[in-house]
Image (cartoon, rainbow, N blue to C red):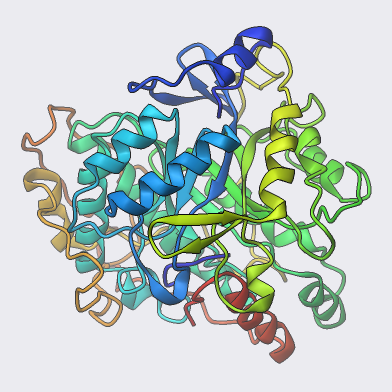
Length: 475
């Protein structure tokens, strides 16, 4: 829900559960991608966590640079026995060593959004907001967090595609994924997974598009997005695909919630899938979905998820999602949902062994343009030429949350990139030199977003309402 412009290490049988309940260690195993799953060493890793952004999107602040706040909240995370938190906004001009150390000591990994409100891709101006100023700030964030073993993954984008018309931002998000992966490789950093977090669009949009466009289904666009981010050359493919899902509203079941249909739809997907947000509040939350999410019904395809959200934020409707109510920086009050989630997580024991993951899968076929997917071809915008120097020299200091922003700098991409342009040209120690270029097709003009498809006004309002529920939506 929050947008910027926008585990217990769970595995085989008794080993998994013992790990989840054992005393925490200051040093955590690095998590890698194998097939369609995450692994911590040789053990399957399931994301069991919460979305964490005290202050919400209306008051963008960095909880991992404030040791008083993070220590207060880590004490609560320990009670839940979670292994992952997602943070939507950080200040890359500040120090995060102490809070990251405290998270590691508690056995907790970080899933980090690399965008901030002023430095991000805009839905209405994707070509103008994709530029070297933006990438410098993104790369500066990578420089900071790559050094922590408990950095689990980076989100290159969040909810930018939130209806049919905004599907034409996909090439820019995918280009950012490609650029981050190349920067990580060129700088000699460990291979931290990079991917996208997709929106849960909403049934009203579905009804409108059924009237206007024929008979698309709600998941048509989501599935096409998943295919798109997992197609093409290795350098541009995502390492994972996450999506927000509020379709399980208690009381519900695997079948009636549509979760069964989604598992079947993604059964052949070759990279990890997990829920970047879940926890419907249309009724009293019992978190009945927890037992199913970590059962053999889903673990062959899904790798867990993150409950939305830790702190109570926003207006009356938004506050329903909060597990705790913060009181200044020193204390929190646990709401009823906190203990309900605690009980549900404690009872959810992942299946034995590797959970039935798919070791060898094939990349997806790139989706064709359709009534629900407005991307004309598989080409991506070439990386802005001015950003090539960062591969050799590093990104430098981040501008933090007070910078002037990058969204109005203007378009810098010189055309369509050649397939494979994001391949790493040399692997070396962090901080060493390398070379790089944008590798655009010769003679190509500046990359332009495909023509916008006129959206229903009401569906647009759904997106606006979603912004109040989950943070600033970039329009």
